[in-house]
Image (tube, rainbow, N blue to C red; front, side, top):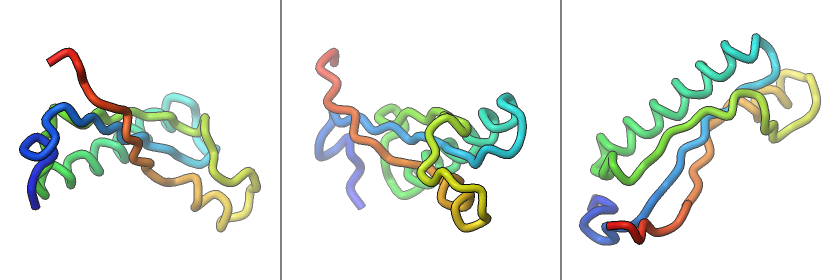
Length: 90
């Protein structure tokens, strides 16, 4: 698998870690960060350049589902990958 850096060196990606609404704000932010970091780590293990990927936590601030059932909460426990553009400062 070619890394982003060899094919598009200025490519930038953001991994956003999300949680359901249970837990304190601090706990959810830490959990979301661990989720995002794990996805970034997996991508790097597969050949991606770590300098091109930013991992952040949104905690429970951006739910995908608004209900309170287990099925709805499970949709909020996720990491999203976002293309954030091209770094033109290199």
